[in-house]
Length: 180
Image 1: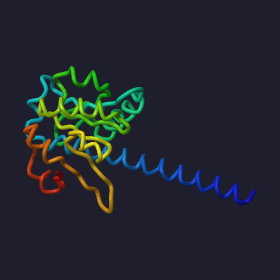
Image 2: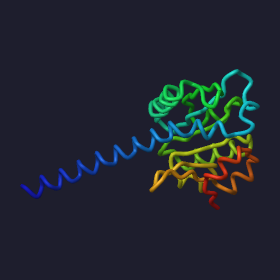
Image 3: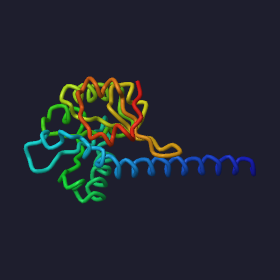
Image 4: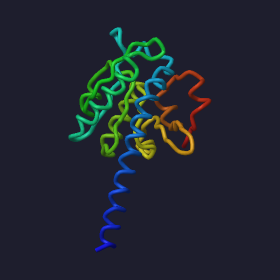
């Protein structure tokens, strides 16, 4: 019985650590991604309105997760970054690819590879930066991701960067790691 209790406690402890880690990553993305968006030198030309649109994109039935992240981005940044007014909104994969007013895309975790590729191709075609929760998504053509290792690392997909003809302030290139 004592062994069974230890096993149960071990799994519960692991679950809580994993949940805390995921929350830490999402909060880091909420704080950093709008700042990366502001480094896009053609940001203002991507919208007709006074506010830039930051799309938090979800797949399947993850709308509430995307809305939570979008609300967090708006709350933390007060809908302004580097004197640029913006609004983060939750959109499905199909909704984002039909719109022409999106300036930046963040794909939340657990999106299908089909959806990742669809959004990546749309981003390249329209020169809209696409970032993802998971660094592994760069293999699907996503432009970038943020990883929390010993320090915070911004990864940029070099091939996608060239194909999409993205233009960022030189600061991003100095701090990011370009990967093949």
